[in-house]
Length: 400
Image (cartoon, rainbow, N blue to C red; front, top):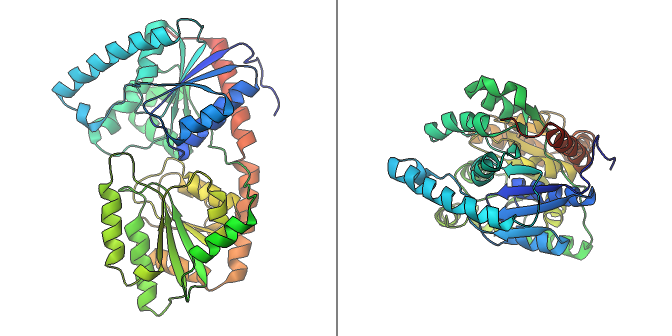
């Protein structure tokens, strides 16, 4: 990777992040921290709890601290909640001072909107602050209205992970225009070292009588569209199309097991229940993609990027995605897969049937998707652009 203008040699970047999982924004953070270290800088990451991401940092020698990062939640959207948030912030700012008392921080990177600790600490310490926006918020309205204004007040530089994210931010707060730029998330090249693991997954994903496996990877929550995919599959089932399985890979957010219980109940009630495979989240997603034939991303709310769609295309799998948020920037309708209206089970079923019926089309779209990923969404491309952004931020410094 070419070194950007300027250098990170000897520079310390403090990353503030809201989780310790290994989903979209978590993986981006891991790759960025590694890139900073590779460029001669020092990455120090603050996260609210331990998990797969902290394990990955430890394996790579990335410094991290587990402590509150001052996350704005729905519980804070009241007078009492705001006072509680202010108290948390005052306590945490002192802890950040102590953590970094023996080193000079040159840039603060807040990864995702909900993390306020980095923004407040950078303001207090007069440090350059970059806010990396991975969300499009539509509810609650107070957050959708307020966050872009908060970013304008507390960020010197703003990186949006898609044109859709930038458009939402700009529509709410036009003054952000000069601070913002779009850098698409990067996708690493697929790595599958264990062919026996793929063969085992292929068997697991294809119960008796099943020819093809259709996958949905991602958090089990309200917006990933698990119900829509099951509805679409049931429509095909009632039409006599029954030689495919659904593979649902993911786990609910911490403390939100209700979403998993609801999905399990939905599966038990489905005529497809013998052909639905439910698998916990896995950090190594590439064997799963290799064992699938089609990947669906039937999101019901705007995706700010859609890493699963990009990963599936990198793995040369055709994708059917909701045409909402940034998914239309990633999936080229009719070329690398299909885009369908959100919550439209009939449209999803029709596109699914087209791919189920044509091996040649699945291969053609898969190869087109892999080419698009290499040219537009490579990890190298993302790292180079963000490292240049860091160099500019370090050069420009803090805007008082």
